[in-house]
Image (cartoon, rainbow over all chains, first blue to last red; front, top):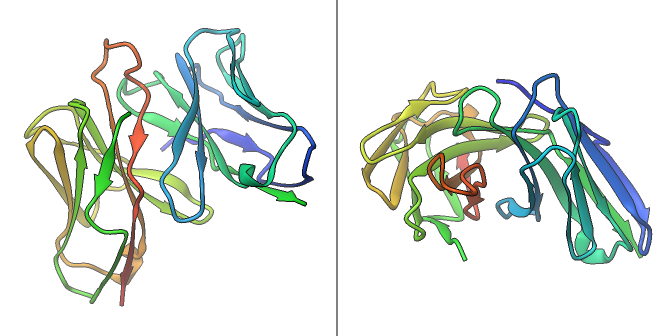
Amino acid sequence: GQQLNQSPQSMFIQEGEDVSMNCTSSSIFNTWLWYKQDPGEGPVLLIALYKAGELTSNGRLTAQFGITRKDSFLNISASIPSDVGIYFCAGGGSGSARQLTFGSGTQLTVLP
Amino acid sequence: DVKVTQSSRYLVKRTGEKVFLECVQDMDHENMFWYRQDPGLGLRLIYFSYDVKMKEKGDIPEGYSVSREKKERFSLILESASTNQTSMYLCASSLPLGQGASYEQYFGPGTRLTVT
């Protein structure tokens, strides 16, 4: 199936730094979602975006739905140790209406 | 809060065994999904269901079947387990299309299956 291009694949940052990751696609999506997965657990929904150009925040997390509807980014400000995990983007609404297309994930490591 | 539970967190089975993975959601969601997750391959959709007794193949259905007899329960069946089915299996559910946040999928904690 189709995959989203998510970058970077991995990041090593110092505690307190800001983080940015993004997803791009050749297809248009109606929805962009961002998930976080802790080791050995299922993904947890962080932010959902439904409108092109939309900018949404959830605490220290901010995500934007690209104006072309083909991309999205996630920013984490002032990172803390519990931000460690894998972050996935997912696009919905391209092709089969009920399915999501997932990015390959960004592995985030926060160094003390 | 949506709660999706999976019957086992860890499972070890032998090659050739029939394996049942159970998933239950408590939010009256219409749609349910089964994925497998492997390093470097991301999340791949095995099967999904948008109603009781309805099922559709995802990207990698070979070697798997599913059952949805009740709205809240979606089972993944490995008819004859093989070593290449060793993986993390994730179940998810979502609202039906047309209802608000219908693209938002909520995941269970996962089942780590090892086939020896």
